[in-house]
Image (cartoon, rainbow, N blue to C red; front, side):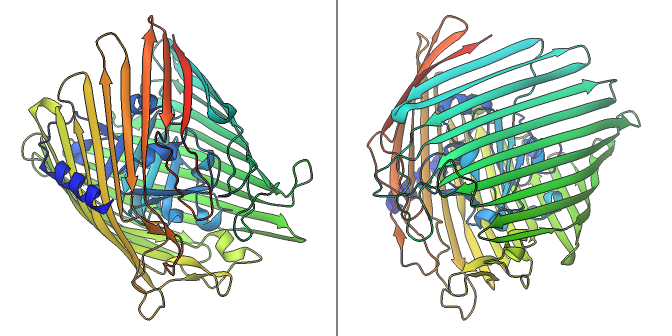
Length: 612
């Protein structure tokens, strides 16, 4: 596996790369920017790729992104976490349509990707590296920014339904349009499956049901004043196998309701040189757990985060831009179960400022500061800076980046009746990277290579001796990311990525000093190819290879590496109808991303899609 990964990395590094389009990025600073103005490592997964890959889970798309590792407790719907560049999974900040959705009642404020399917998502931006200046607490590893569709001009709609292995049904539909001052859209998706046994070696199937809806409305009262309303909702019902000890067949059930809301006003002043955005966002995540279906919940958690945001952008000249803002948020945590209850809340007030300067043609420099005032831990100031230099109008981009990260302990880690520790201190990080994006020959090939390092102090982990959370002294992650996109002819697209991530415990004197951090494989490779035939048929394949890792901090329980192959095809029938299908895990590979949990073997699905 390692030799194959190194060989592909060498291939990517030797591949000539060609000019990129002037793509717009929003995750780096929270505002729209051309890619060649951004000095940070960002990968974009667009609507075409999401539709083409036919993936059900967002994490299956993220897994083909350099620097990303994930683990899932079982199959679709099981608890799923994403690590960026070897950071803790709780150090990944997640946004849906601009709203922070990390759960204040979750372990480490982590976001469970298990219930986030691709149905309503049209674009994903993955920023790798600490970026607390823009996003505050949480963004130590990086940011995953998920966006639903932009309303169409006029009127448009899409719908699809597919069916396959384990009696799996996946259906979705959305409509959007623009009329007068109003533009908006609404979508809904339904997914159900009989599933497989979550526990490795189990015999009973664990079913899953997921309902997701989204809506947005924009009212442009004038050219300078508008109102944005957005909403997202997920309901999930999962049969899972008990994790109190080694996973084993059980009758356990979890139910989740997740609500996401955004209401914002946009106002432009000074002939458009000063833009202002004021918004209220709200996220609530209710999780109830049952030992037996049909009974009252045995225990549960509820996390709520109410935020107020103000962001101003002042651009007095084309060569300079100032981004500044104020944020107030109030995370709430509630727990019940086993004869006990707990609740807690905090307040965080933040101010930040960023300057984006272009001192001469080809160079863009960004730098800024943020100060967070935490009601329990006091003040924390973070700094970040990056630069992007292109000597040839975007054909070559040289990037350098430095970012500081800050993450306060979660309310769960502080106040959980069983494992909480009120003596925890905030995590801090410093992240560095340098990268090159090269393109040639009109965009027929594109290459990106990035080297990175991140040092983290006071990282929080679970202590299996005391059964409480505690601070590690230090951890370090370093490595290399590479990606390539080739289009040798118009009909053929080939993309590939490789990443080496060396994430270790660096706490001097600890028994685990020098050990690899759990569930973070050093090597991962992904290669995809899609071909459009002259008669309309599109065929494609993705190969993903992940190296060995360990499931525990002591590095005694190994998770073997694995290689997965997926095939897909689609064929238009007329102007509005398309049939499609895919085979996942073609060679029926047995593997695990979390010890003791099962994963799908070979599975086939087929469906139809309609557009109007």
